[in-house]
Length: 227
Image (cartoon, rainbow, N blue to C red; front, top):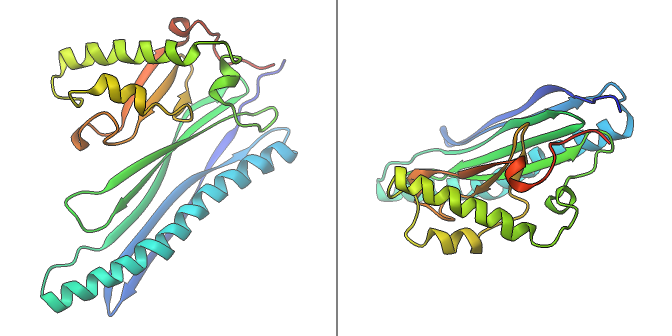
């Protein structure tokens, strides 16, 4: 089977909203546009999905964050408090674009005037041959016990990390690792599967989004390949 890779181009959506001469909200969105040598339905399907992710975040910012920012601004003016403009940013990172596999994550960041902002990560893993989403169960072929295997590897890695960096996780991190595991929160890379936990899932805000990279050989599965 011939290897399939994608040419990736960045598209942007940028917009600043004002109210009474003051900046309320700045939106800065970047998302990938894919070009394939075989183009067609697969290319269109992937680009439609990526465009929908970007447009959905834009609509959320306009319909939810902007009205909240305006209300916050009005209250700040009345009470003579400072007002910090809101931000809505989305950036993407490619983790795999080879062997007929594309993997990307989107970090959605919003700042609503507090001490710090909040970031939520989502992933998109898919076949460049079919355009289909690759689920964790697809990779493990629904073999029994694969979630337990992943969790054991994550906890083993977390135990080592906390020895080197005490305080990086909450005290009950082992329990939280199991409770907050999301089978959709992973990315494919050339050498590993990267599993991540959102801010506050297992660690304080300062620790950020926690990522555990587990080599394919440790999971007993082959590297991504064309079929």
